[in-house]
Image 1 (tube, rainbow over the protein chains, first blue to last red):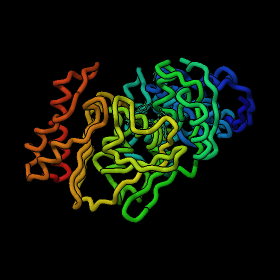
Image 2 (image 1 turned 90 degrees about the vertical axis):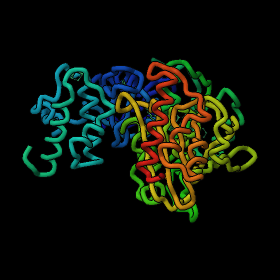
Image 3 (image 1 turned 135 degrees about the horizontal axis):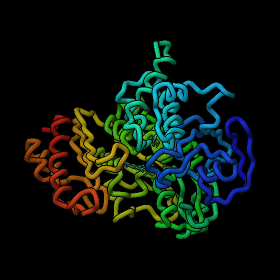
Length: 157
Length: 275
Ligand SMILES: Cc1cc2nc3c(=O)[nH]c(=O)nc-3n(C[C@H](O)[C@H](O)[C@H](O)COP(=O)(O)OP(=O)(O)OC[C@H]3O[C@@H](n4cnc5c(N)ncnc54)[C@H](O)[C@@H]3O)c2cc1C
Ligand code: FES
Ligand code: FES
C-alpha cells in the first residue's frame, strides 16, 4: 500500500506492506535509526515518537495507520547544531547514561510538557510511566524535565 | 516481532465498516487504536487476514451531553476522556479511570470502544462502565441495537457483539454522584491491574465493578446487595469475591487476588462514602 507522511518536515511517499510497524518503517525504510526498539512489546517506550504532535509507541502502530500524518522523531527535534531545549536539559542534568532509552524519554517528555507545561515532580514521574530506563534510576531524567519546564516558563533552569 | 500478513482496508464511514465486516466475515477484525489487537498480532496470538481500520471515523469520536446520559463515541480515545470537563462533571469516575489506563502513549491511541469490545477482564473501563450502569450501542447489517453493559460480557475476550457489528456509542447515565472511587493495584506503574475496583455512590443507587477477578469484567452484585440492605463498608466488602472466579498467574495466586478484592472494595467503599 502506498502511504505518504511528513517526517521531520520532509514529505515521504513509500510503498509498505500493511503489516509493517511504524518503528520499522522509520528505521529501515527512512533510515531514522534514532528511534530505538527496546522491548518490541509496547512496554518500554524506547520507540516513542510524535504522531500529529502526540507521543505514541511506534512499535505498536502500523505504518499504514500513520498515512497522511505528521511524524516527528528524535532526529527532528534539534535545529541544526542547536539542541532542542529538552535535549539540552537532559545533557545539562545528566539525564542519561547509556542513552538507549533517551530518544523515547525525550520525545515523551516533550509531549508531556505540551500537555502540561508546568508539571509537579509527581506529574513528571506519572507522565513518563510508559518509559523504562535501566541506568539512571530516573532521578536525573525527572530533574531534566523539570529544568526544561522551568526554563520554558521563564524561571531559572 | 511482525504480525502475520493481512489485507488492510480503511473504512471511511460506519456503514462501510459494517459492509466490510459482512463481506469478510470471521477472517476480519476491526482495528481502532490497535493497542490491544496489535500486541496480540505481533505475538501471533491473533492472525486476522483482513484488518478494517475504523481509527479515522471522526464522527464516532465525541463526548456529548444527551439529556439523561452522556453519549460517548466508540472511537473516543482514553486521552479525550481523561481531559473532558463534561465527563469530569457528569461521570468523574470514568474520567479519572481513563487517566489510569496504561501510560500517556497508550492513552493517545487506545479507545473506549476498543477497551470495551476487547472484553479483557483485566481492562479498567469495562469495570467502570459496569459500575455506572452504561448502555452500549451496536450497529450491524440489521440496524442499531442497545446492549446493557450487564448483558455484554459473555466469556473470556468474548462479548454479545456479533461478528458483523460495530460498537458505535457508549451511554453513561447522568447520576447524581455522591461519591466514587477507583482502586487499581499493580506492580509497575503502566501495567494492567492485578485487581481493580470501580465504585460509585449516587442518589439513584450504588454500583461496584471488579477488574481481573474472573474470565470477564464483573459486577460485584453481592457487595451492592449488602449495601442496599444497609451493610457498612467492611461487611459489604466481605462479599467482594461472591460470584468471582479469580485466576492464578505470574502476578498473583487466587487467594491473593481474593484478599486484594476484599481490601480494595473496602477502600473503595470508604473513599466513596458508600458506607
Ligand atoms: C502497554 C499497554 C498498557 C496497557 N494498560 C492498560 C491498562 O492499564 N488498563 C486497560 O484497561 N487497558 C490497558 N491497555 C489496553 C488499552 O486500553 C487498549 O487501548 C484498549 O484495551 C483497546 O482499545 P483500542 O482502541 O486500542 O482497540 P484495538 O486494539 O484496536 O481493538 C481491540 C479489539 O476490539 C475490537 N474493536 C475495537 N473497536 C471496536 C468497535 N468500535 N466495535 C467493535 N469492535 C471493536 C477489535 O476488533 C479488537 O478485537 C494497555 C495497552 C498497552 C499496549
Ligand atoms: S520498543 Fe516500543 S515500547 Fe518498547
Ligand atoms: S540511560 Fe540507559 S536505559 Fe536509560
